[in-house]
Length: 316
Ligand SMILES: [Zn+2]
Image (cartoon, rainbow, N blue to C red; front, side, top):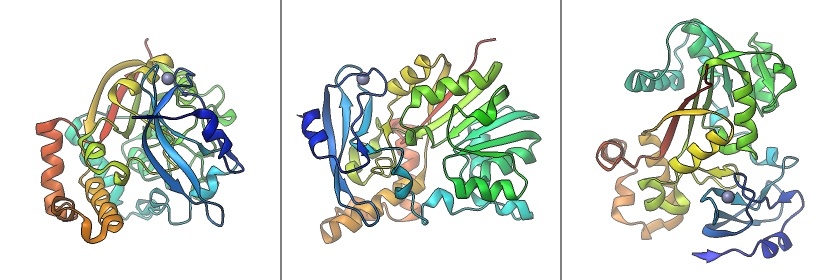
């Protein structure tokens, strides 16, 4: 691994970019796992790295867009924002259906009513799904167009992050974070704020891409979970647990979920980059059936699928 000289990175920073210390322990020594380059719309290319803290193993993106400019990287074709909650009009939502299947497979969510907060609710598909199950639902998302759209349709959704002044004094039996914690600059702060909003005995569910996966080892920079520069943290089972515990969360279990679509999209990305040089196995994984079978194998036999699922709670 090549050590990264932090001062050198700082010298190369474009306007609005920041080079933070380790978000978990504040350490400055890190090693480089990957390098890449991103170009903001209409801006100058910027070198980015996936680095790992040498004190605590926390992996993160550095340098990264600061809070003033990161919005410009969420372009209008950003996928999680492309799926309006069609079920508002009584049409089944594919994303919500997929989540329901995951619920069944993992038996992970309490069924029944209660108050739920979905952090990073995007287009609101999970709010729709949980409301149908009898939950009183509230959402938070960094995207103002997304939240305005949902608010206009009568949903209780707030713009911004956590802590959030709009939620002062509120309490929830369940807080969910589906692929959102890796997007925030301060995961410990977000989890602390979520912990404060939980009722005693309330539950927290966090799903994030897993760096300690077969998929990252196999695809490297093409793995969907890298996603420079939107994914600011790159969790492993160990660092996700330590991050949650630092926020006071009682970690009950960290398991994994498999996503054949992530496998397929990573293979497609690799093929696009490598062209005819893409190995046969990568080309084969673009196929829906092959990627499904292989994702199943990676999950159940190797135990190294690429999505972590943390179940935690606030002690009673
Ligand atoms: Zn650290």
